[in-house]
Length: 330
Ligand code: NAP
Image (cartoon, rainbow, N blue to C red; front, top):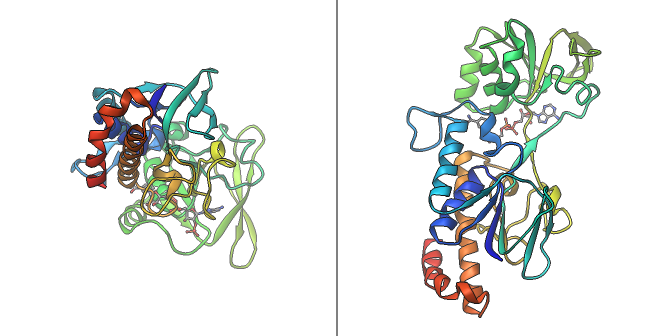
């Protein structure tokens, strides 16, 4: 049996893996069968991760984090966790392949998933003009007029990026002011290809086999109009990815996994959580990385205490020395 399994391969999961691996816990990272690296894999330039004054591409940053974790002995598994058994001292993770992995401790760092508007046409035309990822799909919209929905940093980033391809990008926002940071707002305002459509909700996405437009409803007077576009990029935020733990870990009223104060301790002993899945507020790559650090140190502390209590026997000597390191670092 392993000492530690980490579920998730974003900044939180990989940073937890770096710390845990350096503490000789030989963590297994369940990193996804589809795309390792989490949401930053869908990002272009990351300008605010400390240590990269010239910026770094999201996928490059994640590749560096993975390499750093592997260098210290983390094992990366390209599979998905499909079921968790968190009752009792042994934590069991069932993988997509059917294989079951067991550990004394588990770090849950599954991040968040793109939010959907929840309107007609959205699912039906997904992949046929409706997208959640400008870096993945922007290329298909050369010289076309498209819409980005949302008013936060993601929407500004997507809209700005999409002007590389599209002839025009409408940013449709439900209010008359943006939530995005000043620098992202200013960049979007300065871009001649971007036009803002204020106080408007997208209530339908139109088209048969492909998007032909969106139906907008004024959030001021309820009036409706069609905006002809061939692409719709939804950038209205994310929801914590908690489906694996709904009935297993306590959640907050915001839907994130509950943790005890500033720690990563969840409602189940031996299970720790980190990153966007516990964070309804900051949700930055660097805060997720910090959160992963906390989880690794908490897990290390937990495993050391377990060792001192007499189990698991094989790791006891190794771990007890590290308990002080973990405690003093927290
Ligand atoms: P966000 O900050 O939560 O913004 C979501 C936007 O979508 C808001 O403007 C919101 O409108 C709108 N919205 C939410 N639900 C909607 C719905 N059902 N219909 C229509 N509009 C809806 O999410 P985000 O932009 O994804 O950013 C999340 C976090 O990541 C933030 O902390 C952000 O700073 C960070 N981030 C940073 C960068 C960067 O620094 N490069 C890039 C991307 C994201 P209201 O304003 O009316 O609520």
